[in-house]
Length: 169
Image 1 (cartoon, rainbow, N blue to C red):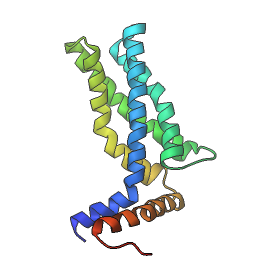
Image 2: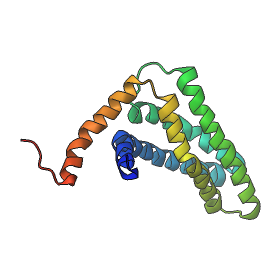
Image 3: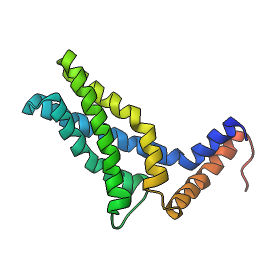
Image 4: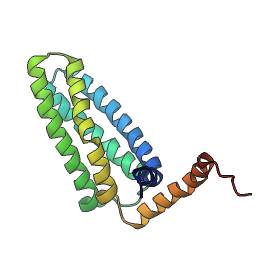
């Protein structure tokens, strides 16, 4: 198996899910940044407390959107398998970003510096968080296999079209 074929296999299995995860991440960044500006500029909290409030508030829609839209989970939430691990990884991002924001704010008293540091901190964890959510948290075998089969089924015709083969009549 060549590297290119492995990349194609990964794209087929995760392509749609990765784009949805990226979309949820954009929503999360926007919510976080709005809350960060409100807490830091309007309310007057310190950069570290503003970051804490913003990340905490944005984690709720991020969890719900990831669970329902990206990984197609419905029904009861598992406290041990879903909620606590999600909050754990969010807490890790919160700790890293709060330390970074606190450090940066010592040198630059700027909303742009605080927001940029927050985004860079979470960006550094983005891939690791996706792999964690996909492999451990939202994987139940059956749902992941069904989602991957759905993506593979949708991708097969487009891959055939790109490879130059003629579609079956």
